[in-house]
Length: 231
Image 1 (cartoon, one colour):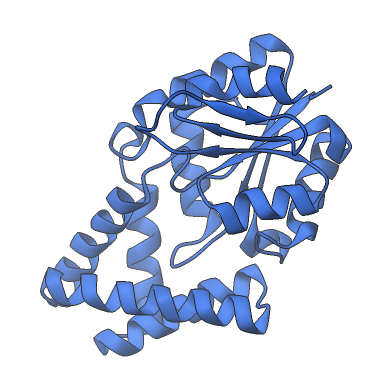
Image 2 (tube, rainbow, N blue to C red; image 1 turned 60 degrees about the horizontal axis):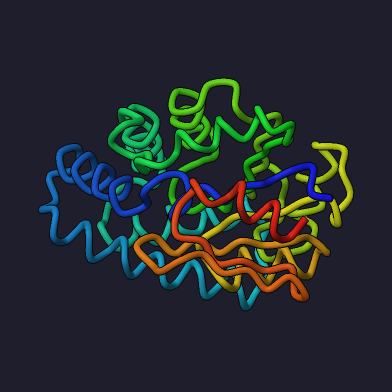
């Protein structure tokens, strides 16, 4: 029986592309660099940081620092000041601009007796910035928020999932993880012994493979269905 659900953040609860555009605008305005150049540098830094995270097994805090350092270097600006601008841009963004329209369904899961937590990787901005948005978007919805830069482990590392399960006080067989990435979210959750739901917005009808404890859903409104199918 599934008693708890953990959620990825960016691409699942909050729109990553909109957050990055907010960062692009803020960095451009703060440092006098045109937005196209900031956007290009950010994309390059993202690819490099993700590759190093995977190959070097970097911890969450190291990845955030690396991504910021790479971006600052590409733009020729001070890394410390860049960090401040990036965090402020995300933390101050109105939740309704970053949250997906179906995020309200997450709060409804509490009425089903499910325990909820966030399990997110971090890149460019700190978990504090993400937490600020989530607390305004879904006040009181989550019992725990576990982020890579605080826990020290990035998904798909099993230890990241174990940290979230420990905070919720449930075993892996009693939990399901919801996310938008096959490698980080589905792969990591299954390796940790959890069920997994891959969200693909705009897709067809939801599908569940009970033997594998995996579902593909089209909206956060389908999470309750996935819990029942895989539970």
